[in-house]
Image 1: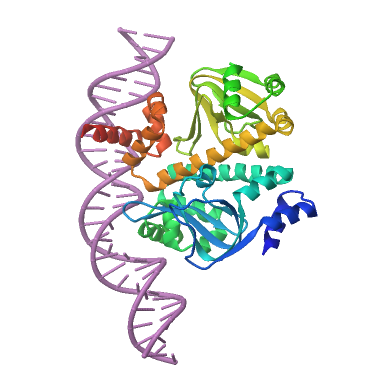
Image 2: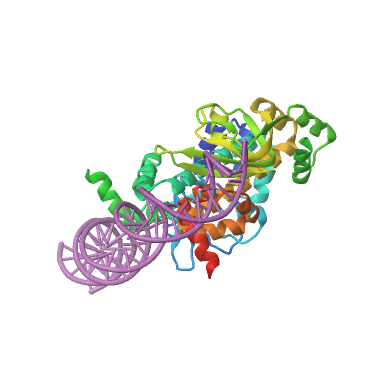
Length: 192
Length: 192
DNA sequence: CGATTCTTTGAAAACAGTCAATCTGTGTGG
DNA sequence: CCACACAGATTGACTGTTTTCAAAGAATCG
């Protein structure tokens, strides 16, 4: 499963065999079955996590017990609570597996060491961060600008693969609408 | 006005006098009066921009002519269209000045050069990116989870200073609600 | 001031949410 | 292999929030 990460690295940057080995040396794999937690609210998150396979979700639960999904992380994406990682404070998000998943974990200490030793990794992470930021801001735009139907259309066009993998009630939560509204919007939209 | 940036740099990282000089050497200041554009949709954005004073907004205009504000950038924040900067494609955002502002500009080429030469700058930018990403995701959470009133309360608590500086119709646009709804929500909220 | 821009208010309509019931598919145990 | 249980999806009727449209009040700026 490390090969998935290696492929990702080679695609996004240029690494020597020694660098790849150094990365492999501090990587740990963890399998999650459906529904299993990678992180629960209140715990401290100490890793950089790369998803080799499967699909995770990051979410909060409000005082009424309603889940609000901030992000889906499929294979070849990153997961974790950056806030908790940076500050050492307890996490404010939950992360669990929507599909059976394999996650590659590197502790913060090891990862920081790698960043110092491997400039290409540093550059790559920088690019990933910038792209994530762009994506987040597109999502903000959608959330504040679109109707329920437009949000759904936007999602399916932007992530056609995810649209088929995510249960509808979770998609509704991600879009900030109720499952009932999503259901109605889907029927309307395709019906004519 | 460069001192504002210098203070910011010294507060966020450790720089030698030579490094500061190198940064100053490629910095250009630009004044914007109220309403003036820093960037218009369709132009290519080539800078890293630091706000020394004033307040900018980044937004899009939809097909009905309605503005949707993605971000406010007050002094000591960054502005620009990262997507356009990274890809060289035309910008999809407008940026203009809400207050008379002074912006410090460094071209992409100069900035990349600085990043190579000054490790502390690289680290600082990395931290800024991570914080921006956290902030974006908090905003996503608010946008998909809160009612109009909760969005307003959340904003005033998170950015008490901005709440007084931003015209209400712009705040409404930022929150994804209409000015009328914001007006009603404000009366309700304080009324009892 | 006078004109423009911004904010507030009111009434009606559109939209999304809630609650409850039904339908569908899947997996499990008898 | 069937029947049942369960989780997810859909539907309907109703409620509530937010938008829309129009107008009247503030506030601001030249």
